[in-house]
Image (cartoon, rainbow, N blue to C red):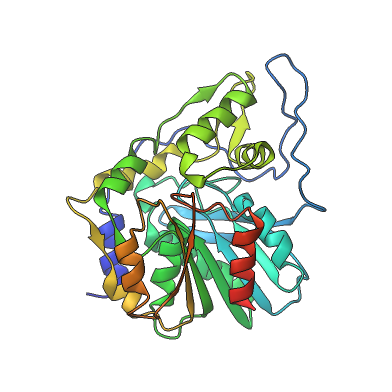
Length: 330
């Protein structure tokens, strides 16, 4: 059975869900956000300049959808770093890394379909690795890089593995951030406990506290860093409440395909031929030490870097983490 068929069987066994109210990417600018008392909340000003925003049209079984991406650096630079986020996150997670790398590279950070400012899929069963890999391949065809370096956190790393394992893969170098060739069932169960829930928050500060709880394994981040990660992962409703900025329908195929045991993908990993850096949170429950060490001995024989005091997954906001990736890409 071919890789795509195996991935389809693993991640997308079928099924549809009701189509909830959708936030589309037709308006890229966020509306003003306020506190519960109506005072405006300023967007975090942690960067010298914001990224450019663009989109690519991708196909799905019901038609087309738009995938938004954020772009840093010279648009004519032939060396491109593609940064792809985790399951419920957005491309803005990579702002600090992208701003640093943009001095040398063109950096592109998409909102994978169903997240951030990208469109939602009408058929929820398509929220799976084959759809994401197809969308990212469409994006790669649009940007036409001479050299492509991929930084993938968690789900973003799984998408990268699916593409890097193919013959004539476009990926020149690969960074896998806290994801590997085995997905422990217990870790997937933890993720499934919050995936697809639809919490509402009375204030932005309540949303920040939620993020600090759910993503505590990110490690000891500063208040401005938590503010930044929350700002781009929530939106404010007309009634003033705050909600998560992703389609709850992404949970549908995840729950239908929930495995009875750990998910092993060694055949994919062993087919990768490009130089690979494996970043592991030293306390990660998704990428165990045994699996990480095995990945240094087979397939592309990844170089392993462990981040102390961090679980799943390193946020790539701190300078030491950024420097590790920058040195590998250089």
